[in-house]
Image (cartoon, rainbow, N blue to C red; front, side, top):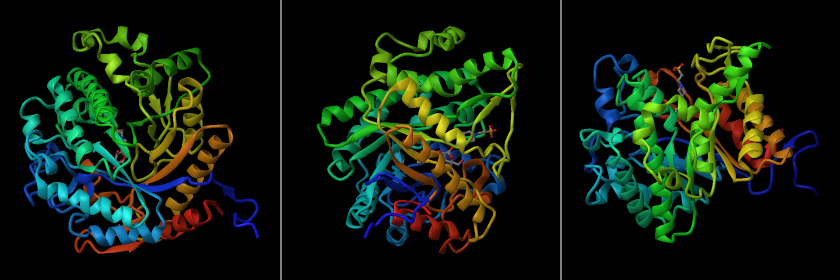
Length: 438
Ligand code: GBH
């Protein structure tokens, strides 16, 4: 009696890591409890006019206090993998120095609870919440920050490395550069692209130093970076648009992939960014390209460029107006990574959409179904894709949008913080149970 799905279903490889993802500031709350120090996001969200509706992550989804309830919800979904991030300033309130035992205990509770439920923990070390104490010393604008980060990472490897076997260094350095420094609508809220490029190099250096620190601990497990990538398409058939595709692809994708996987910046990008050259020291790219065990891919939207370098949407968007829905882009992205960077193991660590539905989120079900079908097609084409994590497990603090966008499989009431499974949770549970799409 074959245990597979009904014929016509898309079956995923055995052992496929079905997961969901969150990040610390977006769900934990307990911002000033058990010795946690502030991060740049505490500072930023408490400044007037920075976050829609004046929302903050002070309570967020109250996950810090509801961790066992959330673990049971994960178990109910049948998750094989759970991606979370560690709040740097919860475990190191000053960003460096002695560990805050009470803060670290929270992650032991979480990880022990995952292991007890047969869910593999995947820990991200930096999901944008730089300790404020380090920002006061210049944060990622300072070269020293790369080493501060690696020292913190090493403390986490020694503290949790017997239990956590998949580590992600940085979440989306591109977004920190663009939103934290370029447009300044994320913490630390600087409107200075040039400074952002400096921070971007230091972030990558921090990644490489953390990979080296991990090797030095001799802990079992794997490590890599989580990059948000966008396939780039010409908006029309002009030669000008085709030319822009190459340049925009360097900015969106190769600027991050090439250093991490090939120990180099794209040549044209590097010569176009001469102001950055003094920031890049001899040997940095060898450190940044220290061998990763996996690449964590986050896919939301394609980018379509015109001959003038402008961007246009060609597909429907969502409540998040930047999220142009194009599932085929996920297939194109994954097959492109294989073609240009070889067979490094890949896992999708974020993909999802906000839905205005309370719990009957049929739009999210269609979105996830179409993206999983595209991922399946890439696997058929030979891509080594090991897992897929929905963004997000819970409705949460969506950065500058506050609680106005709800990305969760699980509804979290903004007032009571009560949890309720959405239709997408039921649907995803079924996908996991049959290891494929209906
Ligand atoms: C991810 O970022 C984050 O990792 C996660 O924390 C977040 O909750 C999730 O996605 C959903 O947003 O406004 O036109 O300037 C997504 C990547 C990159 C998407 C920057 C928005 C800004 C486009 N983000 N982008 S625009």
